[in-house]
Length: 201
Ligand code: TYD
Image 1 (spheres, rainbow, N blue to C red):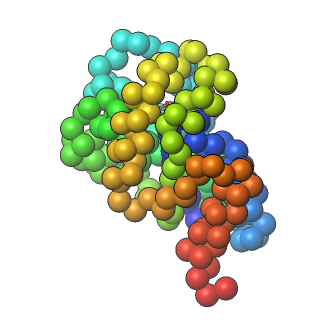
Image 2: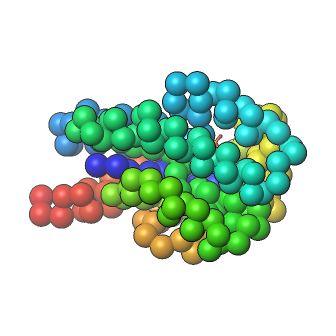
C-alpha cells in the first residue's frame, strides 16, 4: 500500500502520519516505511534547505526543484520500499505540488499536472487530505516558529489559496480536522482507511 498524507502547513500531517504508519503496520502485518517530502532521502536534507531557504526562485523553478526532490525520493526510498513488499506512508506528494505551486503560487494548473504526469511517479493507493481552517493552522505554525521556511513565512494568504486548491483536487479523501482532538482525527482517518483498504473485513 502506498498512502500519502496531505494538508496545509500546521494541519497535523506529521502526527497523523506516525499514527497511521504504526496502525497500518499492525493491521496489515506488513513492514511500513514512513517518509516525507521534501528531503527524506540520502542527501535530501541539502536540497530541502536549498528549496525552502531561498526567496529567489520563480514559481516554475520551485516546481522543478520539488520534482527533482520527488524523483530522488521515488528512486531511492518509495520504489525500493514498494518493490520489497513494504507499505509506504508519505507526508506530501504530487497533490502538494498542485496545491502549492498552482493554487498557492499561481502556476497554470494544467502545466503543473502535465509536468507531474510526464514524470510517471508511482500513483498512491490512497491520498488523505487533513482539512483544517487556515487560521487555526497558521496559529500552530507560528507557535512552531520555523522562520527559515519561506512557504510558512508567506502566511495566511498563501495557506488560504492552498487550502482551497486542495479541496478541488480529485481523488483525495478529505478528513475534517476542525475542532477535533488529535485522537478524534486519528479515529476518523482509520475508520476511512480501514473501509477503503479492507472493505470486506
Ligand atoms: P514541510 O515542512 O514538510 O511542511 P509542514 O510545515 O506541513 O510540515 O514542507 C515544506 C514546505 O514545502 C511546505 O510549506 C509545502 C511546500 N511544498 C511545496 O510547495 N510543493 C511540494 O511539492 C512539496 C512536497 C512541498
